[in-house]
Length: 451
Image (cartoon, rainbow, N blue to C red; front, side):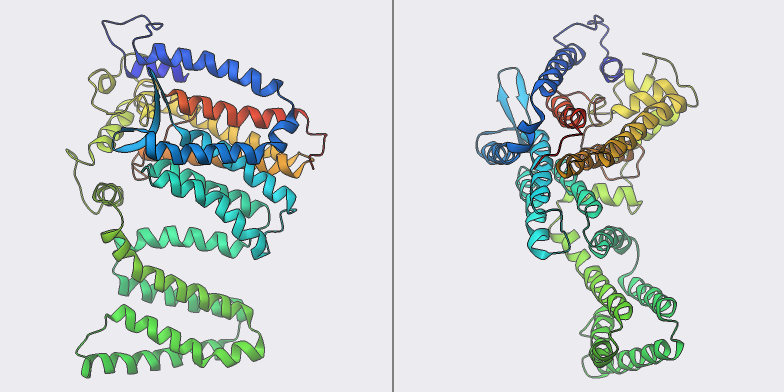
């Protein structure tokens, strides 16, 4: 399906032959044949090879990520590729395999006790180190994919508070860009107050705490207005008031050991502190073109002829397909090259335009089926190593699927990652093949324990 859609996406009247190796669809056919050969070799190799050599594989891909920064070829502003004549290889695609194997091996050795910092911190480091090297290229799309492996840590026993904190940070990041920081801080405090009422059912205590917070806030606001001439922003005043209120209640937290209130307080304080750092990060750390993509996705700004051109044309292309599509090789947006990168990052546009809602539904359904099937297979593994690796595969496929299609329909900022098995590219196709077939090899021997 990927091959046929690539053929349609870059169709050339002068090169109608699908096996024309001077065109992308001809080259993709070579990558597909090579992938089938690679899949056979992966299945032939003994399953214990992947267990015993997981750290060796991880070390090799880390070395490649370092070498590509020095000797790599720069394409589209990123030094992410090794060039071998007509073939370009992207180490970051293969590094995902090594990272998933190393994480599975480490947690298998430590018996996945992710409640201990001595296990949690090295697990984080295994994921973050290749992500950091990939970010230096810079390839932010692949960098984001590594963090999908935190889903694996959550499945294997990592505290839900850490996982929820990560999701909350993502949500707050976008809300901070959309809303005034002061109003957002007040909203977070109101939500925290309601959560305290629900968790403790101690109305007197909660209202007393709210009263103390309001009193402290009023005093600090008065000081800031009258003596400091508004030198401190209002949202910072609220943060200081919250911290002082926590100090006042510290004795109660200690004596009563009121864990729910303490957790809510820490979440609230951390959230407001995070909210007050987003603007600085967004303005001074994130690159201008990345800022533009985020703002366009959120509707803060519109630039249909500039940064937002890709997404705008992508949405038009998908929407023009209607319910059943225009038909194979009949997409006008495709034929007139309105959507850049249509055979790679925006391959889903071709599906939407030529196959319509029905074709898009089938493609999305197949991906969901694949991911659910991977989870089912992972759960039936007797080996901890195989189960963790299986969840790693499912997580990587999910994030690629979600972000790529999300980019095409304007729900996710454009960060440039391929759609597994559909997008053009040898590195991604080979990497996805190896990633998937290693797990199939492990599943074929699921009755064995790897230790």
